[in-house]
Image 1 (cartoon, rainbow, N blue to C red):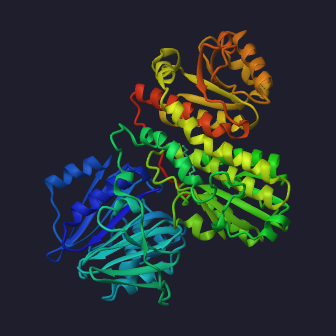
Image 2: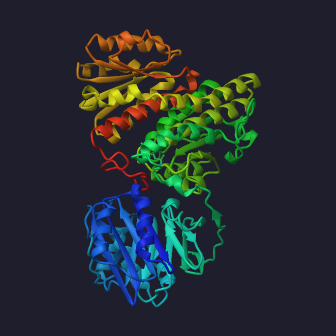
Image 3: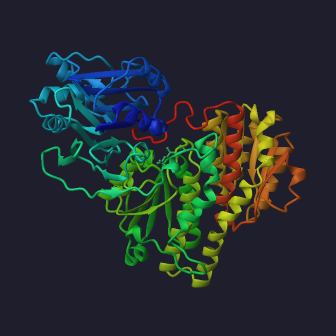
Length: 611
Ligand code: AGP
């Protein structure tokens, strides 16, 4: 939810930290701050608003030293304000803390500290950590942080510095992401890899309950009780440009255009030319477990949940295993029944979504085997699952998920073929045919990317661009396409949009249809095409504005539609992967034409790491 960066070394901490925070701004951007230890002082600059405000203030008030921490915030406790922005301090302002997460027992801690005479400056949960560290500080910051965290309950990734220890950076995590970057005579901490990739590719993925004491030439890791921990140094293979915009006006547009290659990367190493087998070794599920599986539970949030719905339809259709699809935020509170031989498939781009993580923990305690579809290597979801399918979609910086969605749908297609073959309900010939269909998807996506004229024209048309609301309709595999298309439009253009199963039109939504309501109808060739045309005619009979998504060559749909977005002919079960692209582009161009902040929509953050 927030981004943290820390640095110790000979470079300017402000320069390193601010460059890193800008790479993390998608994690939250309502306020920010930096603290630096230098020349026996601990000094700080904070600002409300986006990072460029902090850049400006740092110009006026430069900070010098060799040790620093910084933070870009997405408010959870205490409204966005300078006083609530991080870093937070002890009373004497000699200890500074930045934090990503939520301290769940912070009220009790605050009350206890206040009873001891501590006065709080802010409304945040984070400030309790600074006062706790001070309470336990006896000349060893590492020891004080470990002791303080023994009192803390909840999720945290923290960076801590102290005026009296100008060569020591302390970091710790529980439930929120944190990495340590190792350089030559310098070291870094960050919430996410893009923040430090320009300086080092050697990283440690700190795990839950671990505390790290970092100096410029080394580090020590222990749990909060002082037990030593060894972690493997990993090498990040993302290229630096991957986190840049590469000439596109927004990360989102860049990421939409990456999707042909993203699908190739998701397939890479898992299916081969002419092959009839899928290879998913990291799922860590045995053939016996697959054969014995009696139920699959898919849990996710937002776009990932829409991908999960595509997965449900595919798995039940081709692998003949019952699938329960749950919103993670509902699953975790409904005391779910987890029968024996259940496999859970969490889906998460960031791998840090709090609700999805909690759903995993519940399912594991009730005996489920957990194999997640996740994009970020080493993320909490990945580490807390028994196995994974990494999406290999590369960093997704735009808050609105695009390439992650199509990559997740592709991962489900791979899993479905693998599961069906292992369970003996799909023959080699059918598997080979479906794999061939999957391998054709990238070129179909590229065709759409190369033919955007109609999409751009419609996005500039006032009847769509200035609409007050919109309806998205789909059936079967493309019911989730309607849900996802509506989410894209609403979250970046702020036009209210609702996705609906087309068969539900007559059960209420048709009352909304007027000559000012755009209705996007996914009507590609397939089993539900004729039914979709009937729905389209019902809408047209009530003067609704029909924008159809149809298969190239289908001219018959034109008289029933105001406008048509065409997609290449596609194996219907995999069509959601292709259909997503024109709907992403449409939402993007409408939002851009409305002057919206496409990459950082209001009120949203890239990763919802708190409830
Ligand atoms: C989708 O465009 C949104 N950014 C949001 O719904 C997102 O899909 C959801 O928060 C889940 O995130 P995750 O995939 O990182 O778990």
